Length: 308
Image (cartoon, rainbow, N blue to C red; front, side):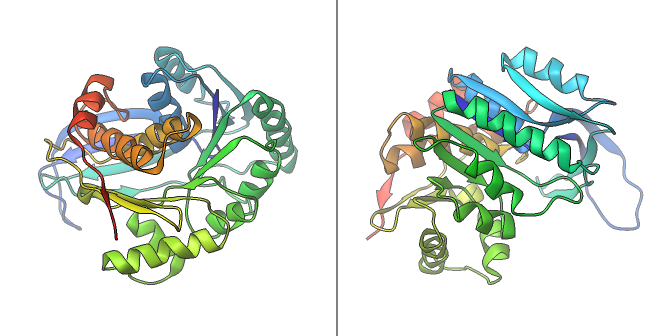
């Protein structure tokens, strides 16, 4: 089983517009509302791959029941720590160039008692897990070391996969992480410098390895991804597909890569699976997750090159 931990669920309101200009009126072409959160997206992706998965994290009393409905629909079992308040709402505007503009809210505060309750719950559930995925932001008032506290509660032998940035990532790396999956923007913000060439990108990955990561999967968006454990390094270019939305692509990549990792796949296969799922996710107009058949189709066409 793979356990996914969502510390800040959200309602994503995705709005398609012809163009987006500050200070001007815009007409909505299409609008979709998703009950989501990065780790919940990962859980749905794992379920679509046929993996055994369990979702946990914080949930809020006012509108949390909609998240339960979505997880039931995807066939994902779950158990949340319920908190007072309402789930935050994020607005994502997508224009005709498939450019994404995001306005993200902050989750209500979570009490120290609730934070402690979740750590205890994770400690119990993870004892039956082969892997754990923790990703996304934190609720208001939570310190970045909470990522580390979660990972400390996980028994030895459980594969730890982390998708976050900045201090949350650094705190995670203090506790032994098997795989981290930043995208290029997240890695640049974490290291506070631009990474333009492939050599610079690999240098950034090596810094995360030096701080405790065993493997880094770096997403390059439409240009694919690269992966390294410090000894070997590989690159896979994404295939050209009709892009509907980039929302959820990174979570799809994490789901497939995590599934491959816990099943003992070598680095090239972890990379190939991740790129296939991330690419499949951008073709899905009505879902944040990916279609399994599309994933398999893309996976069969991908190649991996070793970087010398």
